Image (cartoon, rainbow, N blue to C red):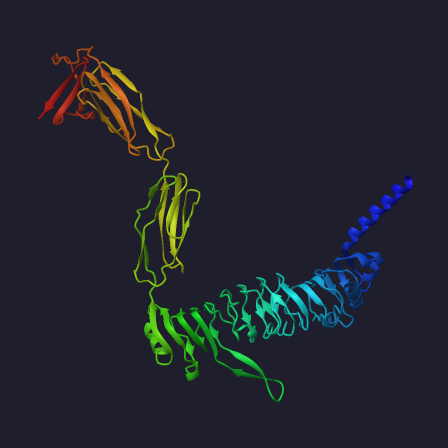
Amino acid sequence: MKQIYIFLVCLFASISMNAQDKVMTVDNQTPGWLSSKMTYAQRVAVEDLTVTGYINPTDMEFINGLIGKRNLKVLNLYNVVTIDKDYNDYVLWRNFIKAGKILQKLILPKVFKGGVHFNTEIDSLFLICNSDTKVVTDSKINHLTLMEGSDSIPSEFFRTSEACSISTFPNTLKFIGSIAFSGEKLSFHEPLVFPKMIVKIGGIQFSQYSDSYSWWEPNYQYPDRMTDMPVSEKRFDFPDSLKCYYSRRKYYSPLGGYSYTSVKDIFKSDTITVGEKCDSLFARLEAKYAFFYAKNPPVRDHDSDSKNIIETLYVPEGSLEAYTKEYGAYDNIGNIVEMKKVSNIALRWTSPHQMVPNEHTNLLFEIQPSDAFDKRLKWRSDNEEVATVDDNGEVYAHKSGTATITVTTYDGSVSNSCEIVVAKPVTGVSIEPAEVELTELGKTVQLTAKIQPEDATNKNVTWKSSNESVCMVSNSGELLTTGYGKTVVLATTEDGNYVGTCIVTVSEETGIDNTMVSSEVKEVSRFSSQGQRLTAPTKGVNIVKYSDGSVRKEIVK
């Protein structure tokens, strides 16, 4: 039994060690000693290896052995510093990976200065490129990922690489050297999006894809040389920041070396757009529609071979004459149309505009002038918890509060706004007190309208007496008895027309109808027929209260 137990312990320990050996991190602080950091069993078992510290040619040969004869599938050298005996990292890297099984994932150092020559297949290569990076050439790579932090791709970088696909560029990329991606076996996931940071693209790129779908995205700035740019069959955009477009193509001379010849590129597209900063353009354009946003027409080469074939050319407002003069006599342009800009977005709603929760309605507007070219609008709410707005100006109220709806033209030059007040509706009203019993004429009582709910937005009410010969009520809810009898006072809400009531009874117990007044009795107070206090006799019906408690109606002429 004891022997079985010892056997099982050893077996479990062996399995655990093998599992650990498949994924390893080795810190090599002494160049040339990497092999001493791993046992023979670890060299055989390791599948995922991360190396940190320093490596030299001796260490590189050891790593090549792991790749060529062992089971290594993932190699991470991101935090490695390479040291060549001649201090030439290019020599160190160029013969890397001589043979062997497929390496599924390779991450090269973040400071990479070598030119790697792979004669075995690499599934995925992860690389940071900078100005010091040398050429990666004659390589069999299934997929390349340029990591964030890369600022440049050198000239002729993947010129002769085989079967390398690229999905995207890092946002930190600024420069692409000439002929960097001109290999015939390169492929790209469409579209290939260039980052906003890029400032220059060298010539002769992607020439083998001139008939493919566009990889172009007009979101980078100031490239000064672009050649053989593939064009979408549907749309081609020169970036707005592009000042000048020209083309240079590289040819091999019969005498050896290189020669440069200027060529006229032909861009075929349904739609072509040229940004407002473009001041010179040396290319033949063929399109149904072309949009030029430069107020001054870009200078063109008016050779007979460079005539544009454009059905309709759209130009900025105020530049029709200039474009007609510049292009009309030289280019096969069917029609030149001026693009009028939006001058105003007139909103039909007055601000603030009241709505209730769950209500939705269109914020009516009018674009001026009516024949403006680009009528696209952007809508936004500054408080989406209260109200939201869709792309068509439909406003949706959600809960009570205020929100400002703003509409802006796409170029941001014109905007307007409307304040939306989402009200909490009234659900009912009552009067306190609900009953009033009095025995004196000229008696005043303050009535209060209780709105439900208490936090309703609009609490305005209208007061009314059903019989003003018994009592009158002011706009503030003050009741004044004017005679004997019974009546009802009403409070009607402005929101919803809800009605609250108060029953008023005035009993004849005090002789208030006695109109005989002794010489010693004095006037105490005087009211209008609407219950308003008067300081002196006023034309019309006056209700007068005397010091003996009697009340008398007087007609003042």
